Length: 216
Image: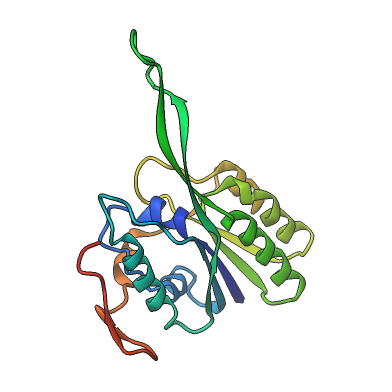
């Protein structure tokens, strides 16, 4: 089956990569290993540029280096939303017995990727870009476009849930959207495949030689 792959980058990062040594991930090799026997037609990678923070000023440089690595892969495109930070007032939890109950925090949000994923998923389906689609995300906001691909476009669609770290479990809404029966196992990112499909430490592109970030 000819598959097109739609990667929710922040969902993949925080669901499976954060806190691991596997951030230098070769997405093409990883997806091919996750769906053996199928042809990977294209990969669309949806993300936003992060901002430097006082405790981690090199974060944008590491991200750009990873973008550079991804661009060495055939048929992979990067689609950028934007990253929004704003101060908001929120209640403390648990609520303290005394003192301030509302505090101001800096809230960070990645904006645009879910809409962009839904848009390309449906448009590519309308244009017969794929026989089947893979969505790498655990975001329940994507349930409706996924359901439409299955029920209206009559295409096979898979969700690969980034739930391999922490206490997250596969989204019930996404399980329903792909038509999984109650009790049927969801597809979950396999940490062993993450470990096995990393880029080499040194890569070359049209600009020259570059290296995996020393600290990540």
